[in-house]
Image (cartoon, rainbow, N blue to C red; front, side, top):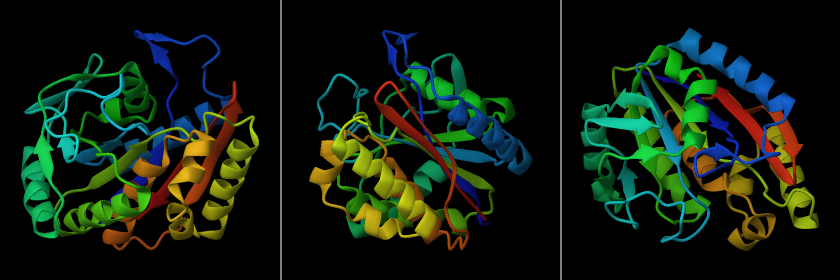
Length: 258
């Protein structure tokens, strides 16, 4: 079946389970989430694949317990928890992904049951996923470049196309954490232009140093979502449905529809 939809979604910052003061998402992003929730509920996918990753090399304080930091980690065994939201893992899809990744050098390994951060709870709830209670795969990415992760996304998209399920992909990440600096402003402008011009392959191929200077943490997860769209043969162009800045940070919601 075709990919139901794919999206990049942002999250607010939580420290020790409490939302950091001044870290509320901009009103434009909240409205974008409301529109996305309607899309999710209308599509009603059987499985939602969450793409998660940090921009920092492991080990770092934000990395969950991993089976292998060099592999794509499938979080949770039978279930995965985003705070107090608990979803059944799509074990069948998990096993297919593990098998399909092996021949071309990618490793997908199952990690222990863990509770992910409140930021993931926020993304699952506000995107409307929590309301439909689908099965979930939560994939935590290894520290690879966006170009390399685009390849993994294509594997994922090819697998989605061959299943008999309605599947959606949600990549989680914010744009620049230095949106008030010149590198941050340049990155945000480049990101928006790439979406508008549908030149995201060029964006993904940007030198990693440029991403680092902007303090972004979305490009790796975004690259997997873009690869999944490509692998699933979705012809819809990406749409920047929401963009906003707040407290030196920038956020976006990008969607593709089948």
